Length: 230
Image 1 (cartoon, rainbow, N blue to C red):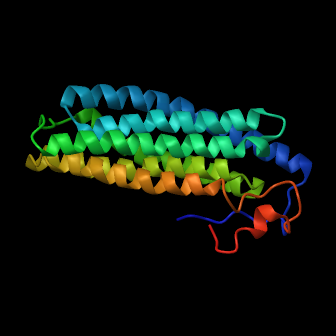
Image 2: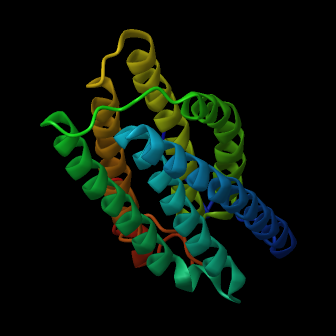
């Protein structure tokens, strides 16, 4: 579902439009941070009570999503957001990798004989709520980021979209465990979360190396180095 950035050589927003888009990104990032702080507290608490690796992993993803959104907020708080793009992308990528490492270890431990996850009504409701809210936030930020030509804004929107996928995976895992007592479904769902996080982390890490539109013309080395696509 990755969408390419708008070619700045074909469509370059006016300075006034760029200000509007940057303001929109900041507002969307603020909304994402606020929601995910609440989501993280609820998910980690409920996951701890239910011994659910998937639910705890989902809560940690919310923490990482806050750090990702904070990186974008920091980038757009500067006078020259493009100059901070590389650092913001690295923060987002490392956040993904950290999530994957933790969830993989905990899921493996659970599958090899750790505590079985219990039913969590709070987790089911939270997963369903996130599944309804996150797609809209992700789409709005991705659209603004593409028009603005910001790789970090698009990467952060993918982090938000990842939350949608994880919500669905979490809902299935918790549902199977609650309905049929399949305790293995919880750590398996968590491993899916880890795998998706690794994929998105790799894409975010590569995003700072090529195809990053800058203030210069499209013929600059920043764009011509991307002959192979990105």
